[in-house]
Amino acid sequence: MITAVTGLTVGHAHDLEALTGVTVILTPAGAVAGVDVRGGAPGTRETDLLVPEAMVDQVHAIALCGGSAFGLAAVTGVMQWLAEHGYGFETGVARVPIVPAAVLFDLALGRADRFPDAAMGYAACVAASTLVAEGCVGAGAGASVGKALGMPAAMKSGLGTASEILPDGTVVGALVAVNAYGDVWRDPVATRTPGGSVQLAGVRDRANGGLLSTMDLLRDPRFQPAFGSSNRDALGNTTLAVVATDACLSKAEARKLAQMAQDGLARTIRPIHTPFDGDTVFALATAQRPAPPMVMLGSLAADVLACAVERAVLMARSAGGLPSAM
Image (cartoon, rainbow, N blue to C red; front, top):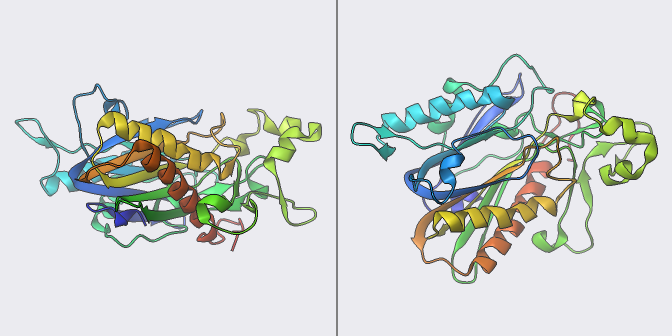
């Protein structure tokens, strides 16, 4: 799990009736961060300060929130908790916690009139520990996948985490809330699973049972009307991820790590980075050891993220009228 990286704890808070929630990755002592946003419909906060030329060089938490843009309100509670405990960027007159955040759209499942708020963000911080619950928790509470034919044919997803120790002892971890327009497939190389790629979740064939491939649907002229912006059921998506390492990285290197980790999403979610998704990957570096070559670190981060995506689907359980893979 991502907390195998020294210096990180993770907390969830959620409303299981509304099927929405918040996941906070706390690094109160500070960590160098980067971000890579590739989806066509992102919702973010404090991501501009992660560019290498920006002044602030460390963050104190990352917040992944349900509730679409409403969910950004949860960050206020995260900042409050950090400030109460004395963490933040020293300005000379106050410590200001730096909390980049991103949101996913889960309003089509559960209730659309209740969203993550400051109290939920604060509660996620209180709950933070090195033990990370997976499945329909936190930002994954209302997550779903396979929405090309609308929510009635979708499946329940959730949140997953994974980690790996590199040959030199460097730790790489990942956490992801999978809320994708596309389907989820196993990456047999990343998961070291015999056999080829297998579809784990996605669009359900409601007439005949089993699963349909979104990529096959995209090629079928009979389904073309379902892929326009008028298909409101398909518009609410976004996969949010954090990759982390105990290596020492610059902000530019953290951004590169986030960029390379995106390949883990591309190998497991098909299609990915669509106009209907706001896919965002954050990277954190806690600077406990010298960094290995980026080709090693970034490539294995992509594998670890691919494993976390699979866990997000397999650890989820049916909710909101949608079945799960397990």
